[in-house]
Structures are given as structure tokens and as C-alpha cells.
Length: 297
Image 1 (tube, one colour):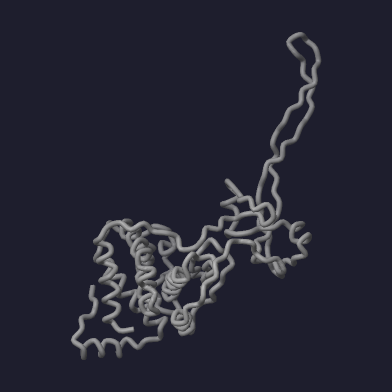
Image 2 (cartoon, helix red, strand yellow):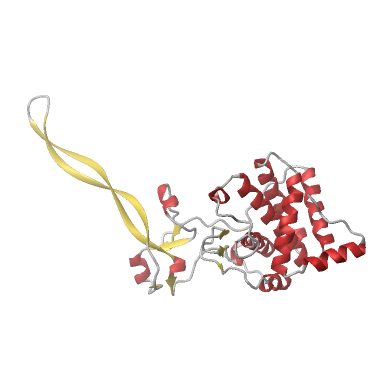
């Protein structure tokens, strides 16, 4: 992928930004944590206690459905209040003893397992069939030292630098196949920042604080890089509005400094080249021969 193409993608993004606000839309179907049998969502504090979206089962439900808990899997807890009754004796205003029933709540909990930790029980979440996009699959396969890509949580797309692992919802949970690849590309770009790759990440805890300046810049790099990869595999026209909407949101956190687009684009270019195993020196020589202009800060 030549520097000329990177520049075209960056210019497209800037032009879209100048056209006005574009609403961001989550590419995948929302799957908050629910009970597999009742299909009721977990609410309140339980939503925060559970680590993943999607379906959960109790041990008894798993046994009844003849499933098997995977070796090494750990249960999570949900809490509830159970109402207990106690009869107490009171003296009324006439000096007579009377019996009164008092009700009081007692906090209880029970264990549940996420369906990704269970064998033999198929998910019942809504799915949409998409055909893989070969050029996108080729780009992913070419990233030879990429981290493991898992689909355990159908409600989260994230790169975990400490574990060096990516989770994205499986493709069938996306309304469009192109948005699946755009989302995965975003996380793949993040992963190039690891210390064993391009070393964008430091040990500074600020890097992992949501909304911090370093975090915001990294999000810009990841989304611009995702747009560049989408262009490379021929799906940018289907994803660019969402790419730009995401970039807008992070620019607002950085006081709408559009110079950051150029800075982030340079870092994104390095990340994309790393994923595609492109020799930067050859790219720069090609640009010089064609009289092209490199992006610069």
C-alpha cells in the first residue's frame, strides 16, 4: 500500500469531518448479559458484575441441557435479595400482645457461567450470515505475529495489551460484514503498539486511562489505521461514515485539533505497514520517483 493511498484516505477523512457531524453507529448487534433460559437481561449491579455480554447459565441449567463446563472455567456471581419473614410479638396501645409479621431482605448470590465456558450448548443469539471478504482475510493472515483473536464476548471489541489478545464479536453478530472487518482492523492497529512490535505503548498507566490524552490519540491512530486497511481491501466506501464519526468523537476530547489527524495518520501508516509487512524504504523511494508528497507533521 503506497504512501499516495494513505494520503488519499487521510484527505477523505478530513473532507468528511469538514462536512459536519456524522452519528456513530455500533456495527454489531447489542448483546448485553442475559440468562440463556429465561432470555431476561441481568439488571442493575449484576450488569456491572458480569464480565461479558451474551448468554449465561446456572450449573443446574447446564446439567439439564446436558452441557459441560470447560476445564479451568470460573463461575461469575449475580446477586439478589431474598425476602424473609419473621413473626414478632408486640404490645399494642391497649396493652395487649399481638403477633406481627416483619419482612426483611437478605442479600444472596448464585454462580453462573458464560456460554463461551460451556461445551455442547449452542447460542441462541440473533445471527446474520455473511461471506468472508477474501482480501480482508488475506490482510489479517499476513499479520504474522498478530495476537490471538477470540470471540468470547459478543458485546465487546477490545485489545488487551497486558494479555496481548483481541476480542471482537463474531462476524454473524454484525449487521454488515464490512463493519466486522473495520472493527477488527481497529483492534489490530492497537495491537501493533505493543512493546514487542512498534512500541507505541509505554508502562505509563495513563495509556490505559479512558479519555486521557494519550488514550485519545491512540484511538485516533487505531481508527485512521482501520480506515486505511479498509481502503486496502476495498471496503472503505461501506465503512467510512462510521470511521469518521468515531474520529470526530475523539477529536472533540482533544479540543478538535485537526493537526492531530496528520500526526495520527503518520502513526497509523506505520501500523498498517507493519500489519501488511510493507517495506517503508521501498514505499518512500516509490513516492520520490513519482513526485508524490509524503504526509508530514
